[in-house]
Image (cartoon, rainbow, N blue to C red):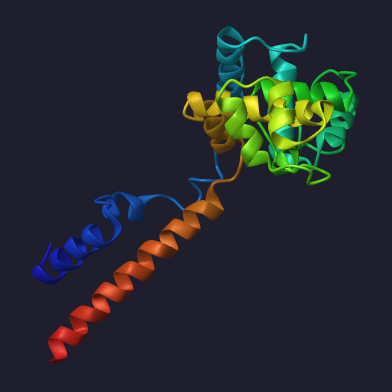
Length: 220
């Protein structure tokens, strides 16, 4: 590369912390969307199996159904929608959940399976009557406090606390695993193109600003 190109590349590396500009430029625009869905599905099933071996799953659903629930978590609005899609099976009009045999499951069981997979929605953490702060409950749960102790500390009803203490335990379990299961499922089952575009925009903005500084220096 010539001196100017080398200088721009050095600025790019310094600005973005990445030295893969050439490789990124060579990637096809379709890299993020033209995924091998069969490979994705296989990897999801592998993750489910690994989690089943490591943790005690709370339902008797098979791995294939857990995989479909994982996909539904990212592509459908709520547990009722996931349960409905599972019940439709191959007859489902939507392809949001992998087509397979119909499975008769209620939304509560779907929720249990989601939690087994460390897949917690923001809505799960929202205390419906705002009688206490979820973050406080999570901290108490991390200390190993019982439901009764947590309820006393929060001045809340133990039955109400128990509902959210379970969510806190899932979050804590996921954190202890460095969120690796949750994050890999998310990466596999969501379209990373938007995130990639945001990252690319940030890099381009940094490079543009850096090159403008060079032009200013040159003009002086």
